[in-house]
Every structure is written in structure tokens, then in C-alpha cells.
Length: 219
Image 1 (cartoon, rainbow, N blue to C red):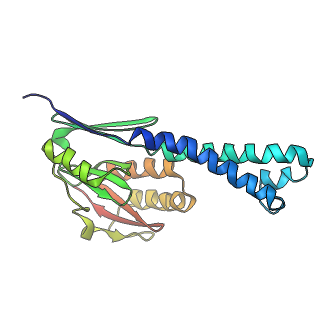
Image 2: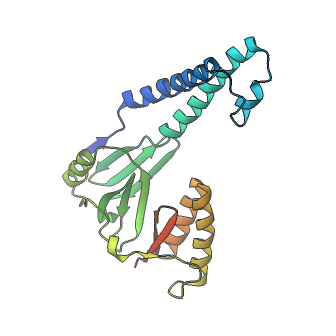
Image 3: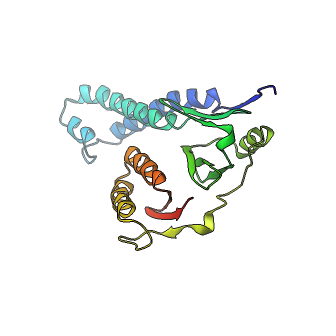
């Protein structure tokens, strides 16, 4: 059978706009602060540069605003997902990250707020990636290549709120969820991802809602 591939990328012009627009906005906001009378009330480096001579401040403040804009652009661009669906595999790529899942392992794909999720045939999570792509285009890409699509998590009603030391969970899973709760409050995305995968190996699927964890068993 001919291997057909359907690709849904983040449009290149959006990525360019982010890299140009975020530093420009950062520079503009910083210059506006200088014109309005200073930045001594702001925390961190903005507050420190108020002690510099006026001429230096005039140039340093906009430059710092541009740097912060570049940092924001990098954070946004890190979620620029490209989805490639073929008759053999599903590949999810974004800057610095690539995940490939055999097509035959995927039972369903669906959006979960700002994430794209792939589930296996036993309900296990195979992938969960940041995604701001068109749901209409994603649905077409998956269904055209024989991957079922759902508009929401088909196991949504199976999740239960996690609280410490639940008797329905093994001690190891409770310990991981306790550590993950700390990472959730701190916003540590790398730790959240790693601990989610640890739970997956134990047959536990976790879903986050407003800094709270909800879980379910997977076969």
C-alpha cells in the first residue's frame, strides 16, 4: 500500500511574527516606561538600571525589554508543533523535540485544551504535546490516514481527583504524584513531563486541571 503522509505545520509566518513581534513589543513597553518617568518600582534588572545615568538608562532599558521579548518568543516558539500522519506512523515535532509513534499503536487522537493527545488501544497515553493547530485540519489529517479522532478525551469521565495516600493507588504512584504536585505548583514543565511518563509506566494516566491532578488507570 502506498505510504501517504499528511502534514499539519505551525504556519511559518506565525513563527516569524512571534520572533519579530515579541522583541518589538518588549522594546516598546520598556521605552514607554522610561517616558512615563522611570522603572525603579519594577523588580529585578529594571529596578537596578534606574541607578544608572539617564543617557545609559535610555539605551539599556529598551535593550533589556528586547531581550525579555526574545525570551518570550523562544518560549512560544518551543510550542510550535508540526504533526505528520502517515499510514505507518504519527510524528510530532517541535523545536528540540521529536516523538514518533507507530500508526498501528494509536487508537485515538484528540485535543485536550492546548495539548494534542494520542492514546493506545488499552487507554495508555502515547503522546501529549503542546498544540495550537487547527482542530479541523488535525481531524482531517488523522482520519484521512485511518486514525480515529475524538473531540474530547474518551476517558474524561473516568478520572478521579488525586489526594495524598489514596488507597486505590500503589505507594510508588502516590509518591510520584506527590512530587508531581510540587512540580505542578512550581510550573516545572520538564519535571511534569518526566513524572507523567513514570506514571505511564505504572499504568496511571494523569490530567491537570487548575493546579490539581486527576488520574485514571490504564490497562
